[in-house]
Image (cartoon, rainbow, N blue to C red; front, side):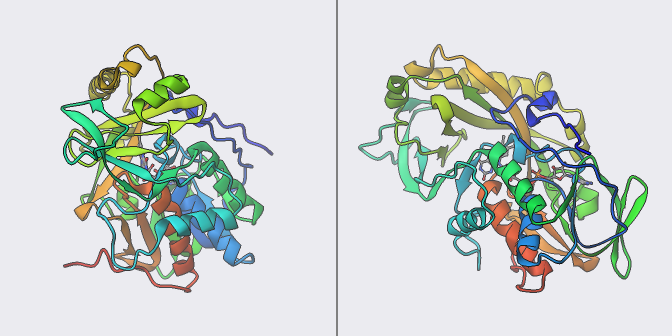
Length: 378
Ligand SMILES: Cc1cc2nc3c(=O)[nH]c(=O)nc-3n(C[C@H](O)[C@H](O)[C@H](O)COP(=O)(O)OP(=O)(O)OC[C@H]3O[C@@H](n4cnc5c(N)ncnc54)[C@H](O)[C@@H]3O)c2cc1C
């Protein structure tokens, strides 16, 4: 039976991002047993589930998503694909962008991936020929170009989910994992039912921090973005964005952005600091600090350049990010059970990392590779 779930855009409390997730899961009861349980239906969990079945078509793979596919960060992201983690390169990380492209190619996920490069922009050290010259606490211009590009997040979510389903993984939406008991083998509890798993991936990112063992170790934040309505080619050219490359500041105040179809431009900035991840459950971008930060982002965009002065914003939204120690992603075995892997906390650099490391986690669950040692105690 097909379940009709609201699109990502129907999460009104966090606003409306400019893409949709075209995926509807079938309704299934949780199985009593599964070889691999993946908790969380964002980019990380979906990539891991699809990659597990891609490599081992006969193993049972079940993904449990508390809400809908992409309900948290992945559906509310900016969609910039970056090569490095927020902490820069890490030992053994490898070539993230080519790994990311190859995984999407092998899983036949069409998400408008383009990797023309990304622009680092700043208020000092601006290149003499910078086509960008924006007014934002000084003159912002291009300081360096690095590898990078963009995806359509809605298409990447639905493409990964379809890839997982097509290969035989089970995706259960509206299936929050309420408890994980770590006996001899891990047992998950979903709506009071117990599911015994051979191996578990916890890809719950900024939520369920007690479940992932990250409470007190990683800080959930909420960050904002706006999208302009369609701009003319002349406006895009005078903004210095004709190359279509995404951009982010290397100094403060922080600003990132990218082009989208129909010559729209997305800009993002601002952080709401949260004491407890549960604040995400009631946070509303129309109220309080999130509303103030969105309004100031909008004003800032209007002042960046005369071409943006009177532009209408078509979309305003926000979403969570998770920041861990030294801004390094968390990728490790659970302290209490080696068959449970925790992956997430990309500190706002998760679009390419989540798919790349999600596939890596799948290979580790299959015993084909080891985890990196980034999160070992000093
Ligand atoms: C506004 C914004 C802009 C961003 N821009 C960029 C960018 O341009 N480039 C970049 O690289 N990164 C960016 N990021 C970060 C990037 O989006 C995230 O790092 C990435 O989406 C994380 O994916 P994930 O699958 O790990 O987590 P999520 O997408 O958050 O998925 C976690 C899932 O787990 C589910 N879950 C939680 N608890 C449970 C439970 N108990 N049981 C079952 N399911 C559960 C949630 O419902 C959720 O769907 C941005 C983030 C935001 C918010």
